[in-house]
Every structure is written in structure tokens, then in C-alpha cells.
Length: 85
Image 1 (spheres, rainbow, N blue to C red):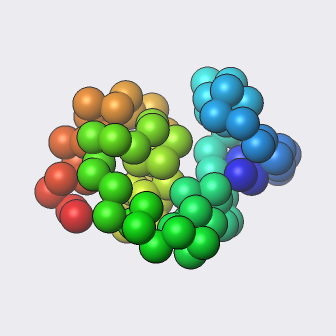
Image 2: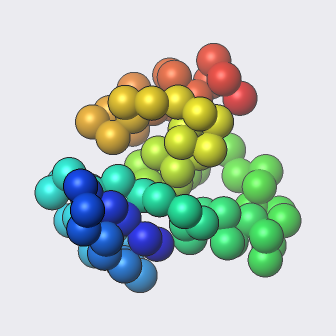
């Protein structure tokens, strides 16, 4: 997953690395791991929101055009996404 903060981009391949960068203010950009998984395994597209990680929920929110989701926790992301999805 590619994450960006200001003009700095980082690549994170593990969930731990993604979380660490997101805590530092980085946000996912471009095609992320969640979208790649959905293309390679269409069954994952049907994954319930509650079963998704925070990074996956944030990526989905960005995909849906929502802004300001980087500071939300999982519970808040679920509430916002249930209205949109």
C-alpha cells in the first residue's frame, strides 16, 4: 500500500507498517492492498464491513469519495460507511 503525507510517499506491505504510518499522519493513496485483493479475489468484495480492518475501511471510504476519514476510529468508520454503502 502506498501512503502519502505532504510530499512524502511510503510503501507499507504489512498491516503493522500501515498502521504505524497512518498514526504518523500518512494516508493511503492510489491502488491499495484492499483494492488489489478485491481484483484478485472477487469474494473479498463481499466482506462485511465489520470484518474489515481500519485500513480497509479508510480505503473504502476514500474510494466512496468521503473526506476527513483519516482520524476516525473503526466504530466511527463503520457508522459513516453504513450510510454510504
